[in-house]
Length: 85
Image (tube, rainbow, N blue to C red):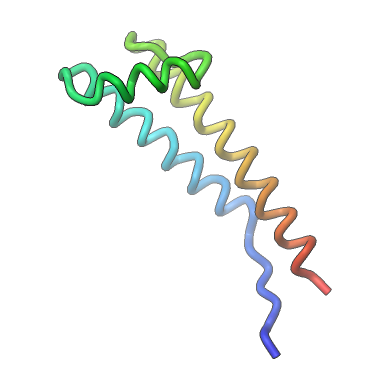
């Protein structure tokens, strides 16, 4: 029989939130240098607070982190509920 594994929702959510904010920073830096400008354009369409200003970067990073945290936490929570016996 397989062992039920209960994942730690908060740890996964924090890690994914940090990763999302880091990716937002990388895209912003590259777009400032003229690379991946279409990716930055898509980020501006998908994220309400992201734009190419410094405050837009901070707002986009916070928004990405919050959305990622909430989504991953909910996913892992539901996984744990469905996986428990």
